[in-house]
Image (cartoon, rainbow, N blue to C red; front, side, top):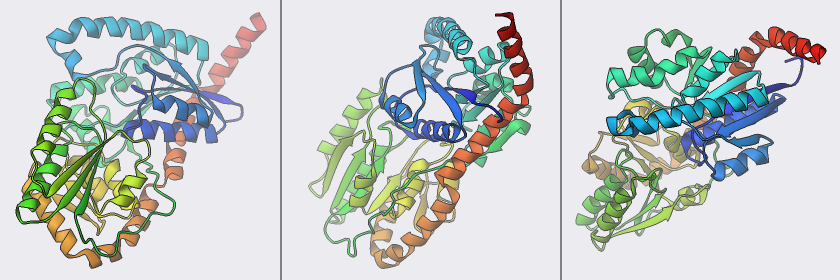
Length: 397
């Protein structure tokens, strides 16, 4: 850009899970490109402090965040209310900020492409969700608002294929940008001998679709053969899923004496937990567009067991320290835990090579540059007309 430019980034939350961390990286990329960045989120949360520390402005913009519950008849009244509120909020923010481009992070904030189009502002959508198993009608409904965007960035070939099946007309405007995943600068190597309890780590939401209960079940199967297992669950429940957290705790309490389960809660920095672990497990039951956690395990020099599904396959593909298991089969997870522990010396020798490959594929600086390039191109395409309009308005004053 030949002059300072402004990006308005719209995001559905303010936590520090996968898509939140990617939003943070995208914002860092815009700032590195000399942009003023304003981020609109609907609620307060730890992400806000991190964005402000980067140099971004943050505004709280209550509005529509699309959840499946809102698509049921019982949720339609709230859907209408949140939509009206969201349209008004987005309109006011865009009028005040006057961005050169709008960056829509995830498909769950569908009003921003619409309001930005009405105001004549180019938009780039970044899709971090993909459920090929969902009904085609539901997927079309979720993706249709992003037909109004100039381009749609996706985080995996699986996500791209899901869009192609659901909404073929949108597919030509999609492009894969692999997630940029930050890792520790100097990860601690795995211990030389995994004597004592096998240390197993799960990181992520405590939800049925993510499958943390499968990790406890797999540990129980090992315990039947006298293997001691320490399981650490790093993460917390999503609001409304407190019942699942209670179920997990009951499952942990009922585990045998050879199994210990630690609930570490949400942690903004997971690297001390990775360093303390022997093996990371990513056991998702449902389609995942990608698998940042699998890459984080590789970057942390730990072997990882991944459910053989959807974008997780791409996340773990071609790493010698990654193992695939069938979905929803704790016995397969247990078998791989045993196999890895029994071939520990060979696995330990391979972790540095896997880490080097993950650094090459998922360098955050490459991700930031790629996202910035797409958004800057959209802004530049409309730059002459918007600059002339601004000058005319200035001369009238």
